[in-house]
Image: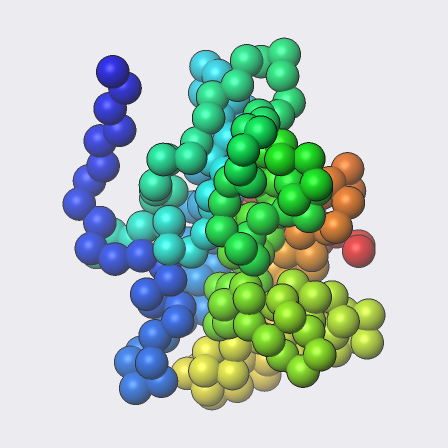
Length: 219
């Protein structure tokens, strides 16, 4: 029997990101730190464990926060370990995951892969930066990721940033440093949630981008 033991984690990322306006939302630095923590956790699962592990249900409600807002990736009920020679895991009777976070190819093949985990992480980035659920209907768009792609093509990408977050810091985009970080994260999210699995980043690249060791991707 395999057991997964956690420290006590009082809340999830979703509860802090999608909180009512009267409650204090997470500040910019905490959001950035949480995403960096999750990226490291995903890198460990994909590359540093004895067997590669596919989480298959990466979403904000499965990211737990401790009292100091350190993030831990949780809920491994759908996770699967795969042999080092394999790249995906398939179940014939279902598509694992949660609507809005599921990579497009999974709907057609039923196969989960490291690339589909990366897609889910890209959607989580959008959820954290935009303060919206992945299945939010905005205008003619049924999914948050489609709306952000539209803003990017229209050269209005920074308009996706959570308005509540901007108000909390007296105009988030007024500071060049934070605006640059917001641009980096939004470009990273789009590179991770690219509709073509082969175009998505690997976890090592994600960690390097979040650490500012390499520039954000051009998408």
